[in-house]
Length: 378
Ligand SMILES: CC(C)(COP(=O)(O)OP(=O)(O)OC[C@H]1O[C@@H](n2cnc3c(N)ncnc32)[C@H](O)[C@@H]1OP(=O)(O)O)[C@@H](O)C(=O)NCCC(=O)NCCS
Image (cartoon, rainbow, N blue to C red; front, side, top):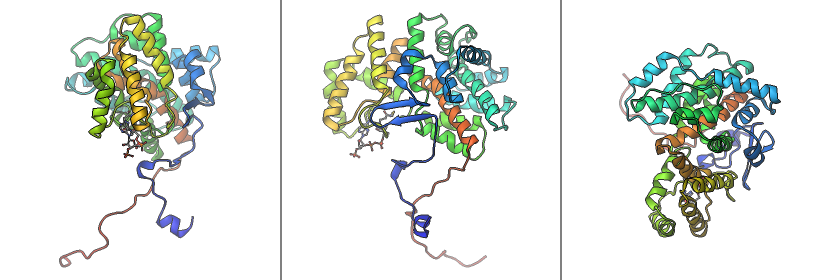
């Protein structure tokens, strides 16, 4: 590196367009494509289940039937939380946001992790399995505890998606709902160097442990410019109410220079690869449950936003009404995202620890020039 490049590195606000590392896990194609380990997301959304995708992200290859059965059982067998974590959840303020409960819970779980400071590949994969299972339980059981209810027991015969729905609602959902959530979990599972995954990798790059990295990721996902957008989107759609109001509502907000949740993306400029699948899930859910207003509202917003600002919808616009049709409180929207993205976060921590180099960029100093310090020496 030349002296000039070392003392005055190129600056890109928000790290836009900066390649901050290599990964074999996921490729986001700016032209509306997404691949996990070389497999197209659309094929997996149709044919895979979440466990298969989580295995692929963590291990690099798809499992055979025996490996998949074993992996599925491993996750199902790791769902229980230590009693002390339940005690802690009961102590938290009842109005605490479920993302904050999740972040706190992951942090506490570190204390019970027998392999916490073993960053070897195999130990990290074992920790990832525990985290995938336990993050789900933290969300579902934390929710019930915050509402003064007793959590439902885990059902080992149900998949990650099936058990998650059962634990939130208390009844085994119909197969089509489990399939819908499974597909959503596949769509949300990874997205290369998005903000929360990057936060996880920065933390892991100091050789901090996987729980520390996932705690950082949970804190980062909560923000409305990232995962929190799927909660904000439903407040927006509830305010709009009907498709005929969408265009005027949006134009009014744009005139006020407001940020519209569920629109725009740092990488995708020709559409979010996940939107067509999520839109169809929303349409199907609407037909089955008599909620056929949501998709036309979103489509009207999409057309207006394209015309006015040239911006496309992102996956969170359509995820928001789907979660509402499931019957979930809006505060659960971002935790549901986390119940899936935990697989991607862990895969990236494994990869970071396997090929580690400290992530430590430079800043551009724009403060006062050097000046004399006042006063006399003590
Ligand atoms: C995702 C997001 C943070 C990306 O930000 P970014 O990469 O810095 O955005 P861009 O550089 O592409 O923005 C280009 C222009 O479009 C505007 N813009 C981008 N997203 C917008 C949105 N959702 N609503 C209104 N204007 C938006 C920007 O303000 C900017 O305008 P300007 O040139 O007049 O300053 C941004 O699009 C956003 O805040 N979206 C809403 C939150 C959201 O849905 N997040 C989930 C992402 S999956």
